[in-house]
Each structure stands twice: as C-alpha cells, then as structure tokens.
Image 1 (cartoon, one colour):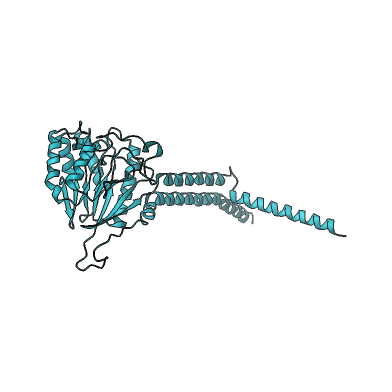
Image 2 (cartoon, one colour):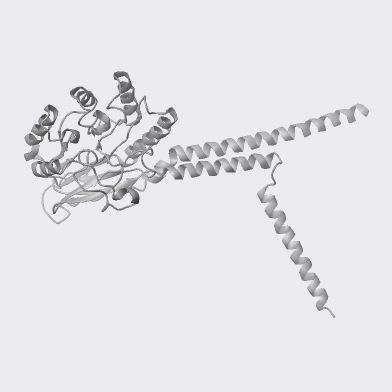
Length: 393
C-alpha cells in the first residue's frame, strides 16, 4: 500500500513538473506564430494587398469612338525611376538589404499582378556608377538583375542618369559604354507602332563636346519619326512650386530654384528637344518627387517619383496604356515605409507584453479588465441594495 502511495505521489509530482514545461512550449509556439505572421505580412503580403488595388488606365481607341477598322494595339508600359542601388562605398549592408528587398518585392509583385509588356527605368539605376570600380560595378549589376529579373517576353529599358555615368564634367566614353553594355543602347525603341526615345540628358550640355555632339546628332536623325519622348532630367522649369499631390516635393523644397544642367535641363536644351522630337508625352526622373508640367499648349511632362524607400516614404510608379495616337496614365503607390515600421513596432510591443504576462511580471490586461469589471458590478450591486434598504418602510 505504501509503495502504491509513493508511486502515485511521484506520478503526480511528475505531472505537475510537466505542466509548466507544456505551458512554456505553448507560449513559445504562439510567439513564434505571431513573429512569422508579422514577417509574412510586412515582407510579402502587404505588397500584394497594396498593388492589387492598381489597374491599367483605359485608353480611347477609334473603335471606342464608333470608328470602323481594326482596333489599335495597346502597349502596357510601366515607368519607374531612381532606384539608386547602393554601392560599395556608401552602401551600408543593412541599408542595402532593407531597400533592395523592398524594391525586389515591389517589382516582382507588380510583374505578377499587372503583367506589363515593357518596363522603363528613368535614370539613376545605380547610386555609385559614376565612380565605381570594375569589380564594384559588376557586383552592382549582378544585384540589379536579381532584383529586377523578368520573363523574356517583358522588355526592360533604362536611361543613363547622373549617378550612373556622372554629370557632364564626370562622364566619359568608358562609363557610357559600360552602362550601354548592360542596357540596350538603342536610342529609339519601337513597339506596336509606338516610338520611345532614350535621351541621355546628361549629354545635353550644349558645349559641343564629342559626347554631346554625338548625342545631338542621334536625336536629329530620329526626330522626324518620334511620337513619344522620355528622358532622365526634367525639362526646364523654375522650381516645383506648381506641383501638387501627396508625393510631390515637400513645402520647404517646392520653392527652391532649380539649377540648370543640375536639377533640370537648360532652357536651350529643353527648347531643342521639344522642337526636334515634337513629343506628345515626356516622362522624367531625377527629382525623386512627382510633378506634372505642361510645356506649351499640349506637351505634358510627368516626373516619376523614386521607386525606393531610401528616397521616399511613399514610392510609386506610373502605369501607361499607350497606342500610336493616344495614351492614358495612372499612378500605383507602393506600401508606405512607416506603415511597415509601425506594424513591426506594434508587434514587438505586443510580444514583450505577452512575455512579461507569462513571466508573471505584469498582470494580464484581460484579467485586469475582467477584475475591474467585476469590481464595478459588485460595487454597483451593493450601492443599489443600500438604496433599496433605505427606501423600504
């Protein structure tokens, strides 16, 4: 009998010892599930939830207006700018990891959901191309193709920016050829009867240098065939004072005068481009902010904001439905960086609170609220009973 009692006592003690371990295991499992869910949302799902709301704009065709004949083919073009892939000198590994992952997920999600036919990057693909060594350039290019990988049926074209080849006083033939070796050097890109001109705006200095003279000669050669133009630097404008929208320049930057040949093209170069190319649409990058400017009576210029969190809290890209005679544009915003950071901070605070509650260092908010409610009800009941007692004869 005594032996049976001893065995029973030991069994009970063993079960009591296992209960805390089981509770700890369940708590650890819950914390792991929460961490996994937050990571899944912030690093994957949020891109699908945000970009899913974007859609290609409708463009009018002769068939829509009741015309006869074959409908014009519509080209779906995606325009983004200023990706600024960090290099070996100024690129901290954590900054690279965070911002490049953001651009990779945004781009890959947009490809999967929107299925563009052509993607244009409007300059400053790299951040340190103007001074990077051959090895650093090769490393940056390898990371670029990993981030912006795309199926063979999608065309990707890029314009050289000042961070890719340097400003006018920094650029040389070697840097230009190095950039063109990675990206197709064609100045004129045509598809579905639509012409796009790839303008090296850094070379439009107007000082008759060899590179500038060659660039102008190429533009003159194709000017008579142009329907649609785009470049890196914006055409000349005084500042961003007339730009509006949530992704426009901040109020303290809007009225800062633009420096010609640095923030925008010179007035002379802008007049030449508009005269030579006679574009119906101009898309530019460089400023990292959005803006729409009307040149003359009917030439619209759209400045595309940066695609990277490094330059904007609210990056975006432009979706264009383009035919040989018409176009329609729509903007697609990416997830806000502060939304992701707020989600992480809130989740971290919740995890810390759960850990402290489990350790018994902090009372459970649920139990605390329940006890307060019970206390209130008890006090209220006693108070009502006292009043009834007083009113009784």
